Image (cartoon, rainbow, N blue to C red; front, side, top):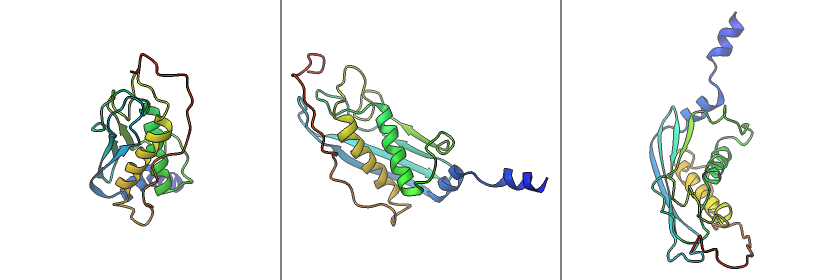
Length: 171
């Protein structure tokens, strides 16, 4: 009986780490590399991270709206880059599963650079936008973890995409 009482009263890793995030609100903005074909100006990637010690919500809904070009990320890329940033700051040995992240949420708005919708081209989203998402997530985590977050990256993963021209759906 004592073992079971102890076992059920020990906080699981998500509870331990969300408590370590502390409180307050962190807001960080970068611009997505670009402009890509058809883009006239770089697009902002914004995160708002309110912390209350119980859950962490990475809110990207104020990021820039979709426009012509290929620098757009599917929502899954945004979630992945956010979780990567969080695990790199907290504890890289944490398992990448729903149990670990049950107190964390990623909010996006369809039609933005962090949540592309058809017919948005996403060729550079996994390369360029994922780096910016990771950078702003790390920037937001720099407040509670200043000794665990390095300076921002160069903002790209240096990929080359080759194609046969512009699609009329994305012009």
